[in-house]
Length: 125
Image (cartoon, rainbow, N blue to C red; front, side):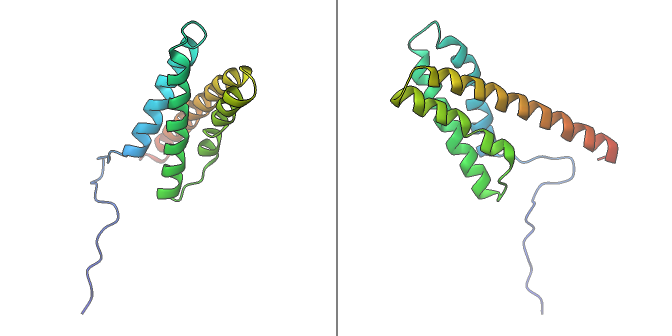
């Protein structure tokens, strides 16, 4: 007698499951891109930008831990936190460092997405 083993992937072919962690992470990052630009003109944008950077870093850690996927992109998401820490505790230029690191992480995200789409087209998936 065998014990039935539940499937680890409950989605059907062509169907995708909503990953709440990835949704939070990507939404926080994209909104932070806008707020990061606004922080130079409006003082209210700076704490929102900082908060979203912290939320993005925490969600990257959660995604990496829950999916056992410690990829370079998730480590790259941690770099803006260093800038936020520098901005709060050392010098205001830390916020600019965080904003630059965020753009680098965003470019990495876009490049990896394009690479994945191209790889899927080549394999016919």
